[in-house]
Image (tube, rainbow, N blue to C red):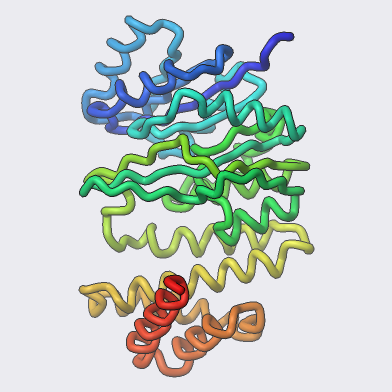
Length: 328
């Protein structure tokens, strides 16, 4: 029986120092029918030189050079060029364990799923490793449950931990908003999960997310970092089916709370007054829907709306209590 082909799309932008390590981990995959497409998204470093040298040694790796258009445009270009029945994504500075795609495909076939996904591990600059969604359990998700888990972070929102049936991508390019620079993974994933009849999640962590200086997690507070996640959930609220409205609205309000908390407790919080006011205004517009929030989050949301000056102290108290609960 012929194994269906997996195409892995690797968007690359100024990844020259890490690309060889990343591509070597892809070539080491135990799944035999694998296509690798690297999309150089207008890099200004030595990425093109590194890729040209790499493909001279490994001609099976296909490289596309294009003008810079952002990570979403690079991924969409790779999907358009793919010949596989299944699509995966990998960032050009991460690494994966040899069995990752074989395991994802095995689960997809065993459970007749349109999406197969897993957890990951984060490698910090100080040498620490954090395992995310490591449960060692299999979880089956029908369409609505998959979308709910995605919105509530019960499964990882990254595109890179997943294997998608190619048919799910039909119509995606017209639906995506290329101006979104942060949380674009959730936007694309929501579309793909909404078209999947079933997904399967396994709580193992074969994907290694390598944090480095310059990674999004180390870039501090930015306008895109604060407002794009809010905008993504607002877009989903406009387009989602009626049976998902409350779930998406709940996710939007939780994100507004998180954004305000980021701005309120930042060491340089005074410079973000305008950002805080914008987030507060959007949260005030949702007050009639606060009943969807947990009691703790409802209290915090009311404090932001009624007495924002008190939020800083209250938030720290709630965080301390939550951490104490987690330890017991």
